[in-house]
Image 1 (spheres, rainbow, N blue to C red):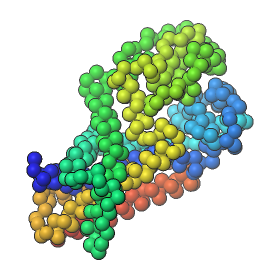
Image 2: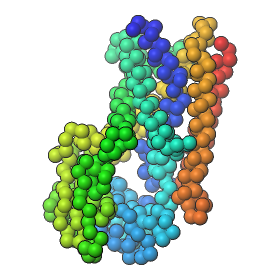
Image 3: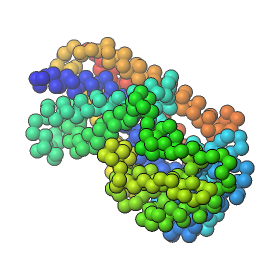
Image 4: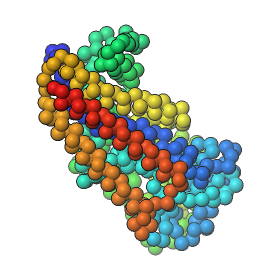
Length: 436
């Protein structure tokens, strides 16, 4: 292709998908720090001190099980970082899931909260936009945005000749379009590695979704259900009572003394233990142990270093995509570059239309732009309704979930800010289109 064709590919993919790509990048940016935002806005999550834990994960599990005898403990998570409480998730007698927080030093239950948190909000919104119209369709639409992002990256490298020499080149003058164009290029260069990383991991998610929905339905190598390539045998329902969780976890630590246990939950009768064992860039479930809870037999022991390339990549995609592999430092870096990528998604569209207007050129596929922007706005409007319905599902008796005021205020403020950005961008973009 010649330079003009490359430019058209770069510009039009950005113009057509810019708004939707912004929404996905914008929400994903805040998803990287969503647990920390919950910590800031919900005092129940905050531990009384940052001292090392004095009680174990099994102790926290038992404390909640004893205090809430009519509820079912679904799973339990170790503190995310110093200053966080244990997070034990329960299912209440009326079918609602809730977080119960246990102080890691004193063992006191600090409180509980709805399962709908800032983390849950951004997870559902970033992945499926709360599923307006259809969750599967929304998920594939989000995954497919990786393709125009890749096209934009490849075409930009071809168009911006000798780009490796221009990491400190910023031209600033009186023309707004020229300033935006220069800033767009500079931000694009510094965020090149990040954009490529997000695009490639999104392509991986697209393949995993296709494998799950179309090919063979497998999302794990080993597990206690049909979702796994190698399925553990079903446990008998009448094999007896489970041993104490502390005894089961002691057995796991004897087998894997290097394993830092991060979460426990029961999977079709088996106790699944997940954690970290010193491997680079893997999520917790890359290291997992399945235990028979009745006799404490280790049924399966998975070490991340033993995984095939495919399953190692599967367990590496999340840390790379969300930047949670090095604690708060990597999350902040991902947050900053996520903001830059969000800026790129909107500035490219604006810059292209300004360029066409300045040259008095007719916008190619202008009606397509109007249709796609209108469709995106309609989907975003649908996502607001879908989000409201999702919140009701986390409440009691079809009521909105009871969240801390600071949490509700943050989510409301973020939503209003996002709507303001979208409305202003559409107003400016369609205003330029009418001048054609």
